[in-house]
Image (tube, rainbow, N blue to C red; front, side, top):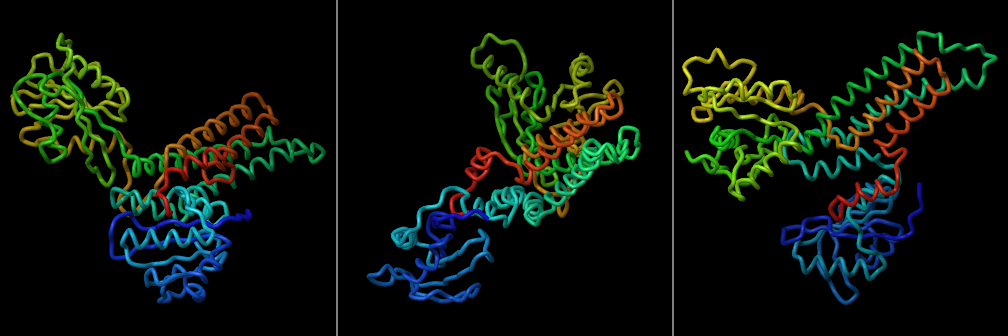
Length: 441
């Protein structure tokens, strides 16, 4: 464990007034600080009623909780002072702690110390922030599973499989007298394929886990008066966008968030796509096109009552990011010409369930409340690099018979996987991750 010399302190409850406010202290100076404030240290892990003194008199009275090292969240000596939640009282108590030798903690520094002291790994540390910031029940439950180590267990199992392959390959290279000809041994190729399949499965679940936290961006696009704003209001369940019979009513992007099976969707209504001499509308069209390029999914809304509606949809059908919707289907008597797309009416609600099912299918959404774990984009990137390295190792093994290069690709794969849990992590990445936490956590 790294030796950390200083003691940190912070308010662990939200700012403002409340019934209870907590000051958290962690580090080697906890015992000395606690004795000055409480008179004597309470027994470990026993809630003890105490008076909090500033040396001149009593600041507050409440509950003191002491956790002795290494049996604490951070792995250090930890003291929590739980008093009344008035901002003045808590500020006085925090100042007292600082005057006795502590310093104010930075964002996420308690969790960072837990990671540095090997109480949790990096995915579990991130899960702490994910649990705090959860916007849906599915996200909260997924964060708890990550905090309990479910994601880490999957990654560690992959690392173990890659390490086992590395050991065999490198042993055959380093000890040729053992006559281990792994290049002609089908078992290695089969094991590589098995690890590759497992990594793909974990990558799929990780994509789902990232959706739980980061959500997906879905942009409504189409010609003016196609019914985008009406569809926006139908999906959100309220009058989010202005709806009129006048084409070009929407000039700017309109954002709203909704939930789809526990996944937060950032729904964006945009200006109708057409050439315009109006500078404001032209700028709206420009922003609409930019939003569409950055979106995870695009709902292309086509007015089914227009004669060339099928032709409008032809160029959109092959884009995996685009869901084509023939809107105003209630105005059409013959729907046979509208195929391979969603038939719906934003006015009556017909087809809404089909649209939601299509969105879930395009997002690859298979999670339900009670399953899955949370993840982040950096995990997806690392797994992607690991997958590429395994694919390269397989090619080198079967086509080029290059043993040393196979071993190198396996090493690269192991390194990328280890970055996920923090076994191998750059300091700047740690600063970025823990810097996003709230102070006091």
